[in-house]
Length: 325
Image: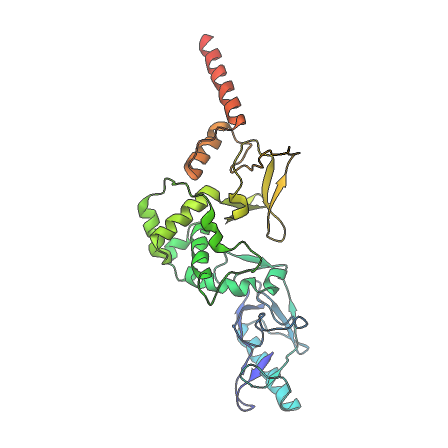
């Protein structure tokens, strides 16, 4: 939808930002807040244009490849309709007349943020406005020095920035059904071996006070779990549900992220009445020494679960046997 401004010769605003996609097609990069195509303002029957859509046709005509040509075609189509049909009944929030321009788009199953290329959302999440909200955390991430974004894993920095912008009254949580952000304060935070200068650097980089950065880092190191897709780490999750479960190297449950992005605790065997439900904070297939090193360095404790004690006794017996021989 485009809102006509002034006379028929005036410009037409669709409130969408176009970009040249990787495959040569024109793609919707962003949708302006409060514009006719803002997902927050559309009714359930109007799907409209979404971030990531590739423009293929405009009013039955094949769309050009460049963003400039596509923008020109959309403006011309809107002005032609306004000239042919006169002033339509629909109007935007400012009372300016609106007219619909029919576009055929290709909607990908998943969409990367074209600005930071660090976040990907499925088509359903895009329609729910997740990428639209992401602009609040993407902008400060883009403003960071280039050197701070070169590292392969920037999840810690992005998690701190998400915490920061979520507390802004005009932004709020990215999803109403997620765990409330402030409840993360209830998670245990073990002091970890993070250099003070690194904490100070993160505070300066993100604009979050050092004490809050320290609390977030310690909560992450004590409770967070990595998210893997196809055998590769793609993110980091800090969950109250996960954090409330203690660790065991022989866990009776697994912490997972389902296809809808929800945290789940799933039993891996029958659990007896009053038996504690435990998950593993580390790769339980690793040898005891590696598990203990990760738990000590990242979570701040030495594991003394039944499995660790059994394996330690076997290791000691093996060493004693080797010495006798």
